[in-house]
Length: 191
Image (cartoon, rainbow, N blue to C red; front, side):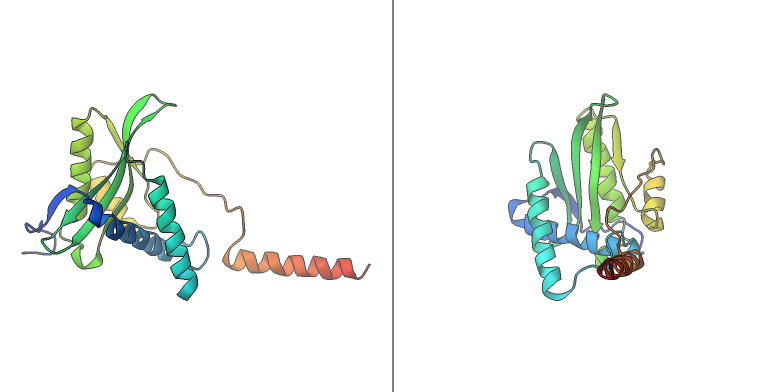
């Protein structure tokens, strides 16, 4: 079997309750990988700070998951979960469109390049169409060229640009801001 051919041992199905924790872990892995590609929040925490951060994120994910509209679709082998797609079927009240949003798509590194992401996205599209939805939306980091190419291959196109404004400086900007504040504080103490 070539690296890019579908893996016939992998089945797609809805998540089972006992698999939620593993799916949240995979979704957190997505965040960590995205951090490495696009550091919008500075360097990721490490050690005990990372453990606390992961626990807080997991709590937030579980709180954000709406069982009435959200779904976790998993790609499974007989032994484990290989990939997950978290999606939600919603109504966009601004444009009056019924649409599906793919929040997260993640395939474990050892299962990549086997067509699993393609199968997950196609299954979300199929389920959305069957439910009467006309559009599927997702966001992808501009720097994630591989994912952007996959999504274009699956019929997605650029419609909008998501823009980010940092409310707090990070990295070099943070160090400059802190130095500026120290300089201003030192100047104020001279008076």
